[in-house]
Length: 382
Ligand code: XIL
Image (tube, rainbow, N blue to C red):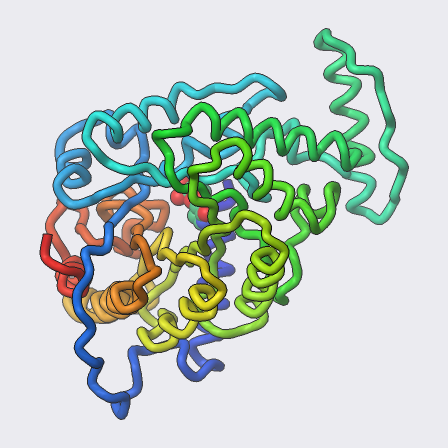
C-alpha cells in the first residue's frame, strides 16, 4: 500500500488548511468562552488492532484489554484480505480477531466493505484502456470455470473495465458474504470508506467508475438486508472541518436519508497532526451537521502526528498533541450522538505512522502520554 504517499497528501492538505481556514488549526481562539459545563458521558473508546501484534502478546494485548472497549481490524477485514481471489474468501485472520474480541467482551467495528483501496488485484487493475480515455464496450465472456477461462476473463476486464451489473454483483456478494458471517459479532460497519474526493464529488474509485454514483446507495441497501441489526456507516477523512469535501459528504448523507436509504452514521477518521488539527467548536459544528439529519457520528481513526514539530522538545510536542486529542474527545462527549472515539492504534510502537510521528495515546513502551489524560478527562470516569 502506498501508505506514505497517502499520508503525505494528508499532511500537505492539513498544513495548507491550517494556514487558510479560520477554525481549522490551533485550539479554540483565546477569546472563546470557557466551555460550558457539559456532563461527562461514558463514551466508548476503541482502537485499530493488528493481528500480528496481538499474537506477539505482552503489553499490546494487555493495554488493549485494560483500556479499550472495541477494536477495528487495521487491515484484516479489507477486501484484499478477505477475498484475495474472486469468490474465494479467506476469513482466517478476521475470524481470529473477532474470536478474541468476543472472548474478552469487546465490540468490533467492521472496516471496511467498499473502498477504492486495499482491493485484490483481480478487482483493482481493471479499465486500463478506460483510464487513457478509450472506452470500449466491456466484453461479455462466457463464465469459464477453469484457470484459463479466469485468466482470459480477467485480462479482458483489465483492458475494458467492468460491466456495471457484473461489478454490482461482485460488490453485493462481498457485502453479503462478509456481513452474514459476522452478524451478531460485528454491530457497526464502515460500509463505504472514503467515498468523497477533495472537491466534494464522489471519488473516482473502481466502484464509482463502473457501477456509477448509486453504488453508495446500493451498498447500503445490500448491507441492511444482509444484517438488518448492524449500524451502517460512511467513513471519510479530512471531513472534520468545513470545506467542499465536508459539504459533499453532508449533501450525500442528506440525500440518502431523505430517500430512506439505510444509513446510521458518519465516521470522521481524524488522521491529523499537531499543526493542523480541528478545534473543539469546529468539530462540534461538523458533528451537528450530521446529527441534525438523524445520524450518529464517531471519530473512527484518530492519530495526531507530531512530526511537523520534530525540532521542538518532545514534552512540548506531546502537550500540543494532548490539545488535539482533548478537543476531539470533548467534542464527542458534548454531542450525544457521538457514539465512539477510536484511535488508529494503541502505541507509537505499532502504528502506520513513522515512529517519529508518535501519534497515539501510549508511547513506544506503552506508557500513557499527555494525550491519554486529555481523552480520559473528557469522558466520564470508568
Ligand atoms: C491503513 C493501515 O493502517 C495501514 O497498515 C495500511 O498499510 C494502509 O491502511 N484510512 C483508512 C484505513 O480507512 O483503513 C487506513 O489504514 C488508514 C487511512
